[in-house]
Amino acid sequence: MTDIYSLWPELNWIQDQSLKEKTSKTWQLALEKSVLSAEDLQHIPFTLLCGPGLKVSFMDHKRAVVHIARESGLKIKEFFGKELPVNMDVLISGAMLCDVGKLLEYELDEKGRAVQGNYGKLLRHPFSGVSLAETCGMPPEVCHIIATHAGEGDMVKRTTEAYIVHHADFMIFLPFKDRLK
Ligand SMILES: [Fe+2]
Image: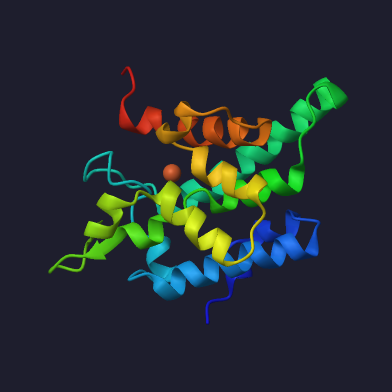
């Protein structure tokens, strides 16, 4: 069994004990179902969409999204207070789980490299992530963040927490994918 707290020390930022446990449980379930180990996540690139030269690891990117989302949430609370309430527990849990479904997207090819498998092609990680999270009893506010964090979410209205996670994720994805040099 993986020690999820060593993979994700940010779990300790979640105040609600039940939400913290469900967040950890969702990661545990994803690792049980995945061809990847927690160790692999420290090495594989965070996306398959930025070409073979990308060196940023899955965990470095995911943890950075959580840190940026948390800082953003705190600033929004500081400047806008009750005008734009942010539930920090929901925000942090959603940021930690937005890409958890990616663990089901990968298969290993004959050389042991992580590639997108058939399941991942049919059900991108916003969908598989919701499935994992709901299995672990995650509330709809957090599932909404997972569901809407990527391009699919442009089709629906997002909560404030979902907007924050979406932008935190994309601000450190798009410049890797396609920036003016
Ligand atoms: Fe994603």
